[in-house]
Image (cartoon, rainbow, N blue to C red; front, side, top):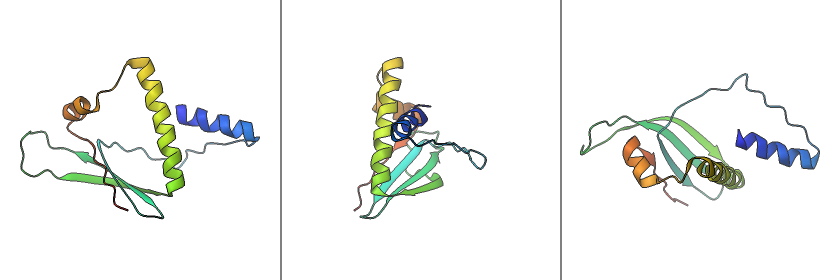
Length: 114
């Protein structure tokens, strides 16, 4: 995984060994993400859009996970995700997010509350 490789490279340069303990790890699927922030934290809400029929007047998103990080951790996450997407696009071609969101029936819905 690219994020482990990037963090391991930084740790190696600093002389720190990182041990990844995944014994309590859980996996979840999300096709929708909403992000809000305050001065002290960034809150990411993940969920699933199961609206299969287009043209509905109201869609309910089943929220499944909330991740809260500091703005510093959010910036590091942004940089790591940017690197992963860049690597993905170099291998598989550019991603058209408007087309992908329409096909998947979901996508990111950022909100910039501060």
